[in-house]
Length: 341
Image (tube, rainbow, N blue to C red):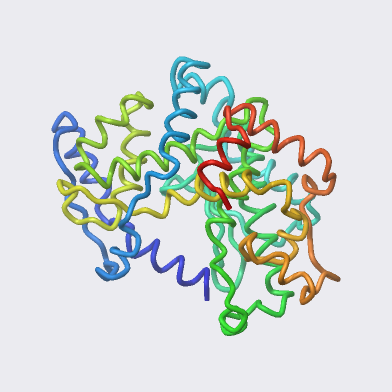
C-alpha cells in the first residue's frame, strides 16, 4: 500500500506536456514560465502537504555544491571525471545482470531501460513483479553500480525484508505506531549511491535540496537562472526545475514539490546517529525508520532476511561512512548542533 500510494502521488504530479513546454521555454530564451497539464492532478490537500520547503540543511547543501565547483570547476567536469562516459544499453543490461548475481537475486527483478524518466532510476512493482526502470541518459560507467546499490541493494532488499516482518501490512504498522519509512529509506539509499565512489560527494542530494528550497520562493524561469550558479547545461537544469515544480500548473508562481528534500535530510540524520544505528538490522527490518529499530528488535523475524554484500563487513562500512563525512566536510559537532537529538 505504501509503494502504491507513493506511485500514485508521483504519477499525479507528473506533467503530461513536458516536451512541448520545454520547446516553448527554450525558444523564449529561458524566460517563459511553463504551464503544466496533468492527466489526473493531485488534490490541493496532497499538494499542500508536499508544498513546504525547509531550510534546515540549506547551508550544508550549498557548501557541498560549492565544494564540487572548487574541486572540479563545474558540475559538468565533475560528472565527466567521476561518472565516466554514458553506457550503451547493452552495457547497462550486462552491469545490472552482474550486480544481481553478486547480490544473489539474479532474475528476480525485471529491468527496463528508458529515456523518459524524471529520475535516474526507479524501483516499482508492475503487475506484482518488482521492476527497475533505468534512465539511459544518466547511466554512467562509474556511477551505475552506486545506483544499483541504491535501488536493488537498498529499496528492493528492504522491501523484500519488510514482507517477512509482522509489520509487513499497513494495519500492523498502524497498530505499532511506526514512523514513515522516509526520510530514512531515501537517506540510506543515497549514502549507498556514493558509498564506493572515489570522491563520495553528495552532490545530487544537495542539489535536489537546494532546488526545492529555491523553487518555493521563485518562478520556474527564476529558478532556472538561479541554478546556473551550480549547473551550466540547460537540459540538466530544466530536469531539476521540472522535478521541483511538478504538481504546479502555473509555474510563474513560487511553489515546490518538497519530496526531493528527503534525500539530504535522511542521509544527514543517519550520519548524525551512525554510531548508534545497527545498519544490518535497519535493512533486515524492512521499510522502517531508524528511530524504530530498537523497539522492533524483539519482534523481528530474521531467518530469511537479506543483507546486501556491501553491508556485511561492518568495520569497512563504518569507514566508508566516515569517508563520506570527510569528503563533504561534515563534522559530528556540526551535525549534533543542527540535530541535538
